[in-house]
Amino acid sequence: MSSPGANIVAIARCWRGTPYARGVASVGVGADCAGFVAGVLFGRGEPRELSRRLSRLSFVSDNLMDGQAQAGDVIAFTGIRGKGAPVHVGVLSRAVRGEVPRFIHADVGGVVEQLMNDAWRRRVHSVWRNGIEKPLPSVREVQFS
View (cartoon, rainbow, N blue to C red):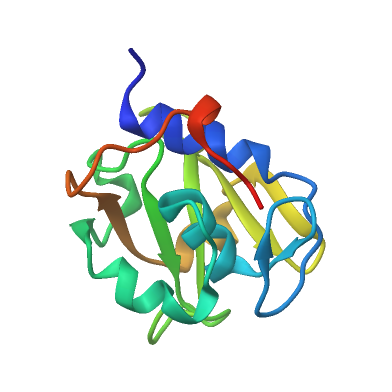
């Protein structure tokens, strides 16, 4: 059986190539960052409900490099200046100590997986993990509408 984090990453990878569309969350059709994360974690993307739903997640860390983060965690990013409240979210797809982390997110070019370069790492606000409120579905069980 795979770990919940591996399931989250597998589901997130199904969204790659989905075009960017503000206020939308439909795999293959369109998504913004909040809709993408809501769709991955909760099976249905409602961007405006993400903040309420994120309250179900457990705070892990405010430092990506402290060794607490793992694949499948949600990463919240500040604005481009690296200060203030989160304005962007994504899913950590690789978190191996000593390696450059990778993450999946919806950016203006659509949903992509990329290395987390220094510019992104400076903007990390916090890391969150899906709790054990309910088991995460496997990729095979997820129905995308």
